[in-house]
Length: 253
Image (cartoon, rainbow, N blue to C red; front, side):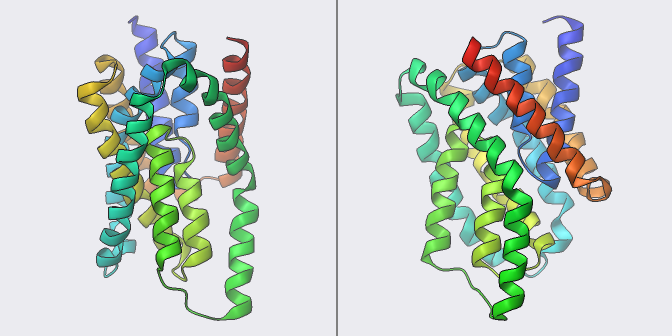
């Protein structure tokens, strides 16, 4: 690894940590960067899962004040994410390598679409809450959806946070800032589980993991403290542009 590759990976990890904490989808920054630098898609995915895990923990810690008194519920949600992440890693490790490389452009494209529609989903959720005036509590549907998102996150982490915010926003009545804190915790659970498994049984790049871990940890704190003040449209625009570039690159590869 050259020194400038290392700098690029570190900066990408820091930016991804910030984005993950604020809106999610940081993988759409780091994954294309790693692929562009010559890493195979599977190695890029597994190294992402391990390397970005410290960043999700950092972001979750930054939102700890929003979760005061809500931790028992968060733990229940985390159980669904935990087992979903195990299922996702099993899929990645058992499906043929070429199957993953064929489906990854579709997954990246799906993630980009989710990032684009996320503001509309948030507005719809807010209007729905104001219209019905009812309290919505966690039920089997929410736990089932979090389990499915955990599978997706264990297989390919991009935009799992956007998915979590969408389903929790529709099925719970908690403030959006609290839901963002829950999202960060659940993303951390998925990344830790997937990362722990991949670290032992999958192809990973430890230098990449170290750089992503350091950068994303710093980014997680920036996202929790400063990221709320950054224009969401700017962050989302960066994610979409990078994601689309990744789709084109993967299709042409």
